Image 1: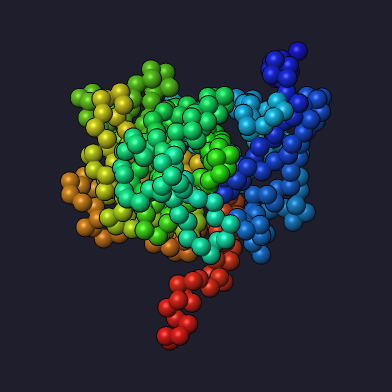
Image 2: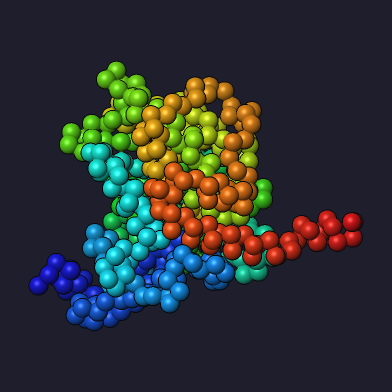
Amino acid sequence: MTDIEQWFKEHEITEVECLVPDLTGIPRGKIMPSRKYLQGGKPRLPESIFIQTVTGDYPEDGTYIDPAEVDMQLVADLDSLRLVPWVDEPTAQIIHDCLYLNGEPVPIAPRYVLRQVLELYEARGWRPVVAPEVEFYLVQTNKDPDYPLEPPIGRSGRQESGRRSYSIDAVNEFDPLFEDMYDYCEVQGLDIDTLVHEEGAAQVEINFLHGEPMRLADEVFLFKRTLREVALRHGIYATFMAKPMTSEPGSSMHIHQSLADRQSGKNLFAGEDGHPSKLLLAYIAGLQRYIPAAMPLFAPNVNSYRRLMPHICAPISTEWGYDNRTVGLRVPVADPEALRVENRVAGADVNPYLAMAASLACGYLGMMQQLEPTPPLTGSAYDRDPSLPSDLSPALDELEQSKALADILGERFVRAYCAVKRAEYEAYFRVISSWEREHLLLSV
């Protein structure tokens, strides 16, 4: 009996959810009877799932995939095997990689993109370490998208109306929900750590324990799914939109990053004196140079750029500094073994695999090119000129023109990704907003 057969038997598994993260980070896949899965049932999906937009459409130009829309074979990553804690029948969930039927990997699959970046580090004897922090909002159910979102009603019977950063009482308003969240995460082995109330009304941040990038990307992917399910069971929504409410701060996914030697485990970002090493400074310089071109991976949606405004807890540039929360790249105060850089640019709406791949790629380029960062900023970065794209369309232009990023992430992936995001941008631009009707209908 194989390990997976034994695991299925111990947990009396009746069904298997075969999961694949698409470009947006949406779980795609198939559900199979466990017996069929163990008897060699090999689930397949069309390659076109990786070029489907968030609206369910496809780009007009499909030259980056096989015109026959060939099938992919799903191959289980058994390290991702977990129970689905919210269903009645014992069900397993497994994240799968995608291969063509000839055994070749699908280069536009997000897990493959991240794996390719990690192999560059492995070839150097390096082990990147990440720790994501994911923010989200709890909101009332909203069945009509024309109406603005509102904070939900907590245990007190009232809505949160003011900024309550780090308030324990504000978190306790939703204790039953968070207790279920922790229970579900424990069943799945998701290593979530700290929970804090953020600045927005009913805005919360979850911190993950540091670890290997693929594992942490898997955990963020599963956590988003888990939290949405928990919130629905409590009669509200959980949203990872970057900017869901006009008057509230946006939601981010900060990525703490360090670099260990694979043999010794030593933190290579700390010098012998405990100060930042040349590798860390080059890594920061790579982030500074290449983040503007990688922005569609850190800010993937039209809504993402509404978050990146000055003085509302979000960066507008790639300035860096020590213990400075206004910059895009922060080096927290830490002991040498924990010395790291925090990429504060990414929104909560990212695909975690692609955001981590992009951040690691930018840093890798900085180290390979031995770049030097600007001097660390000691004042407010909001007083500096913005250096990040302010809209999705020019951001896509920059990504398409970056040969360095295409060489690492894959030229075919970059073309497909940009085509999908341009199709989404064009779909958004065809919609007339309530602001236009309010201010232009009878005035111009």
